[in-house]
Length: 247
Image (cartoon, rainbow, N blue to C red):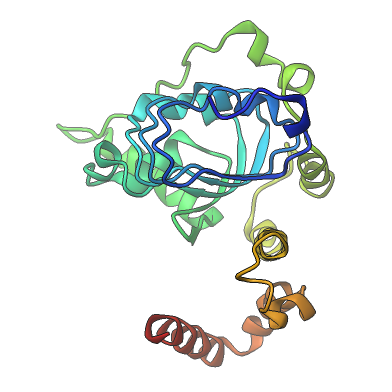
């Protein structure tokens, strides 16, 4: 069990990476949760996430998940999801296609933004495959059973302040197109930096990083800069990655 105490209800970030967890029981009591990192554990079930409506970051890397478990988070809006390292999932040659097919509301997956164009490509992939002699089957049925108490999540779901803010900017039924992609990327940048800053404030080893602290909107503005300086921006990212490797 992760936690079952009232004082944890206000918690927004929970990092339990590499703690030999086998269950997420108790996480449903953290009503304001926005980032959950349970990578490098032994988790097999996602059932306890089913009441959440949205999460800013969900890290499930290197666990023991099977495809059927994605049904529990299928309804969720997840801005940044990581599933890499789950052996059964990784083993499928169409891994990314299947994840995007199973989870229609994720924005970024395994570090790569999910664009409207990619969504259309995934739909086309399954359509074309269905016309072949050996079609690629969907991992989750379209009409998969959902308990009655979970169907109306507007009433029964868990809405924290961050989720409320998200839906104020991006209504659930908003039209998806390339313009929405641009807005999502900017919101992602802000979300990722806010999460980083929050973690840094609570980590003595990272508090010295004054650059991010003093430039709290830099990732958001870098998205705008990239539109007019794509080559320079990409070179900057390469240099940034190289510098991190050599440190």
